[in-house]
Length: 264
View 1 (cartoon, rainbow, N blue to C red):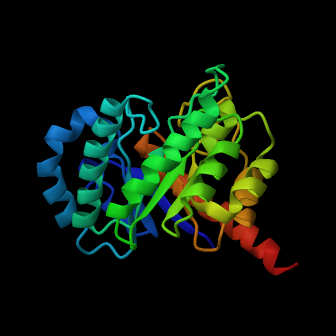
View 2 (cartoon, rainbow, N blue to C red):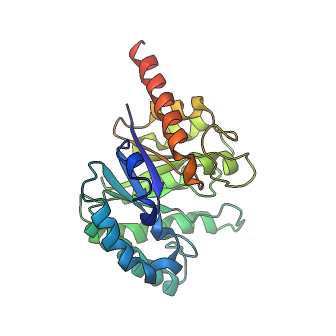
View 3 (cartoon, rainbow, N blue to C red):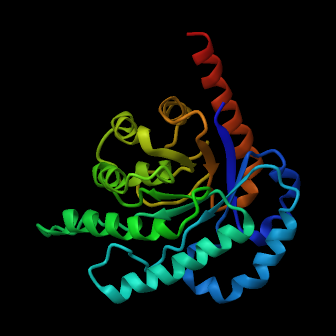
C-alpha cells in the first residue's frame, strides 16, 4: 500500500503526537509563508526535538507566497534562491527527504511568449538549484493553478534528475484542471513522488478534509494505481481537528484499492 502522511505546522506536533505515530510521513508546513521565516529558528530546534523518535519520512512545504523562480526579473529570482536555500538548510538539519514547491505557473496570462518562457526559466532555475541539493533530498513541483500538466512534465523532463519530481495536488486539480484525472495521471505518473489529498466544492481551494466536497474515493484510488508504489499520500486539510477521521478515511480507501488490485 502507498505511504500515508499528513501536513501540519511544527507547533502542532506535540498536540498531534498520538496521531503522528500512525503515519509514514509528515510534512511541515511552516515554510509556505516567507513572512514567517524570521520566527522559524526557535521552532526549528523544537521541531527537531519533537521529531527525534519519529520513524517515518519528513517532508517540507517549500516557500511559496510571492516567490516565482521562473520570473523574468533577476532580482525576483535571487530572492527565490535565498529563501529556497534557507528551506534546503532546514531540510538538511531536520533530515527531510523532500521539499515540495508550488509551481507558480499562471495559465490565464494570455501572452504568446509566457508559457514557453515560464517553462524554460523554470527548468533553468531548478537545474542550477539542484547542483546545491544532496542526492538524498528530492525537490518536487506541485500543480497550483494549472489547467493541465504539460508544462510541469516538460520541466521535469528538461531537468532530468532522479531527485527532481512532480507532486499532484488533488484539491488544486478539482478547482483548476480542464482535463480528466486519468489523463493528468497518465502524463505525470513517471515523475510522481507525492499526492496531496484534500477536497473542495470546485470553486475555490478550500482544503476541506476528504469526505466533504467533490473529492471521491475513486479519484484517490485512481491516483494510487498510477503513482509509484513508494509514493506518499499526504492529507492537507486546513482544519487539523479533521485529521483523525481523514487518516481513517484515507487508510480505508487505499486498503480497498490494494485489495482490489490483489484480486485482479
